[in-house]
Length: 309
Image 1 (cartoon, rainbow, N blue to C red):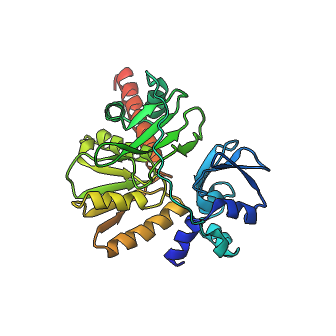
Image 2: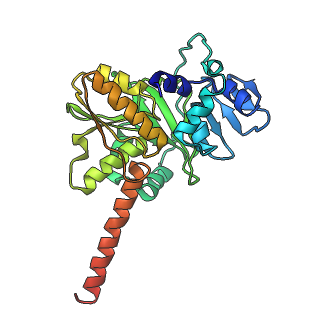
């Protein structure tokens, strides 16, 4: 499939898509859109980001919707889009509004943040503390985790919200986010960049480095907040020393197809590109499996000690 067609499908207008695919209609509420037939389904003012609150699932564009909600494979999702008057799915042109980034109010003691990231996700506590000190993560007054991306002048430019109260925590971008700026963990002048779909995957990769007795700050990491490479393009513009790109996108149809496309695209641009997929669905799955393996070994060692072996 032509990469141009894939990109157009990803950047489709969700209001038009829902109207054609589902027959859903929407009403505008202060710039955002709420589905009349299913009030818990919302589309943001960019007309591409969507979230179905009652299902606890959100995404960007119709491919995410078809794979996450209707459980279609990537190829079937793309086929469904391109076979239904694809010209209607092009985003509407509108004047770009420069709105300031709105960050939720911070909670004093980030109890839920530590519980969710360290206990549930097995992220190393020292990594979490370091990112809190840098202002890259914090807990808001509702117990959600906020991931913040900064520009070259250390000014917050984009942020995303991650819920912590359910197994499928909701995700949402903060108003005024500039998607050119991705959450990153950049500490060295290394010419190598590790690339992930989410901040938690980047933090999981750093934690695996710690478990393997390596210094996690010796590698630079970037979250794309999905599979769009907008943040990667800007990162490379501002970090000209980068020569090697290592992609760790999710081990599903969308992630595999996006990786194949980006490895080819950036390879043609002169970068050394590598595909390093997770063994499980994503890097956090790999971390959880490794953590459980370490616990099992420790339990066996303790058992041997108890019985005198």
